[in-house]
Amino acid sequence: MTEPEPASRVIDPARVTARERYQLMTSLVVPRPIGWISSWSEDGVANLAPFSYFCALSVSPLLVGVSIGHRRDGFKDTLRNLRAREAFCVNVVTEALLVAMNESSAEVRPEVDEFDLAGLARAGSERVDAPYVAECPAVLECEVRREVDLGGAPNTLIIGEVVGIRLAESLPFEEGTMLVLPEALRPVGRLGGGAYAPPGPVRRLPRPDRP
Ligand SMILES: Cc1cc2nc3c(=O)[nH]c(=O)nc-3n(C[C@H](O)[C@H](O)[C@H](O)COP(=O)(O)O)c2cc1C
Image 1 (tube, rainbow, N blue to C red):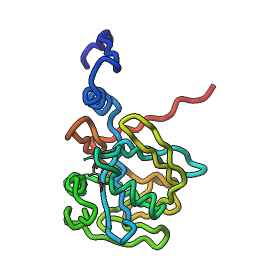
Image 2 (cartoon, helix red, strand yellow):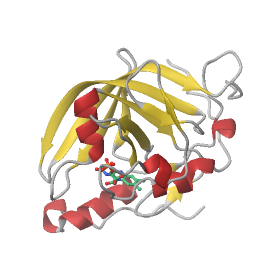
Image 3 (cartoon, rainbow, N blue to C red):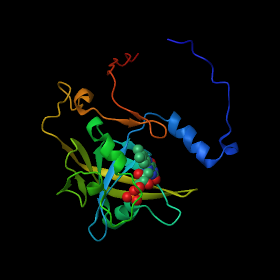
Image 4 (tube, rainbow, N blue to C red):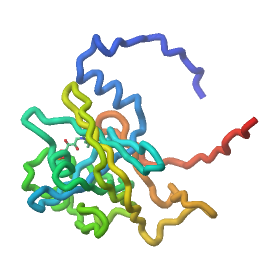
């Protein structure tokens, strides 16, 4: 192991450009889970796009949040659809689906179905009004609960409640728990820019005893 070096170079985020702030944050808040979000448009076109400003928010209620930046010329299809249908699915990005996830991020017109673009099959959820990626082994089915305007660029935070957790029959749990085994799921996180973190060897640490 290399000697730890103190972080003595201080960057004032107000003195760099928005692009540089984005580059700093996306390479330091890492690895980020990717909310790979599928939805229906108001007139029934399927939509699929990845969002790494995505996280789990609470367990009871079971909430997730996704921050969607606006385009110069209007809203992203995902935001439009989540407003219209009040539902979405979060498809967990695995090593096998990484390339397809990246292909689905293309900035295309609302009439274009990114499932087709990425060569993926669509399946319709019975529980929520949204499609999901048929090849994906783990999917969170969500209903939209709240929208928060984050201002700035601008960005909109959508908070959704998970009302269904769909898992492949073969996905194993750690014994005696409902912890999905990462060695079987093989999830991928996002680093800065086009860098991703495929699963390496998994380390397990016991939590320290409480006093
Ligand atoms: C891995 C990855 C993560 C992304 N994360 C975000 C994000 O958190 N917020 C965002 O607004 N765009 C994000 N994007 C860009 C969107 O995926 C992209 O704008 C997409 O075209 C939006 O599609 P839509 O118009 O169908 O909603 C990300 C792209 C990639 C490849």
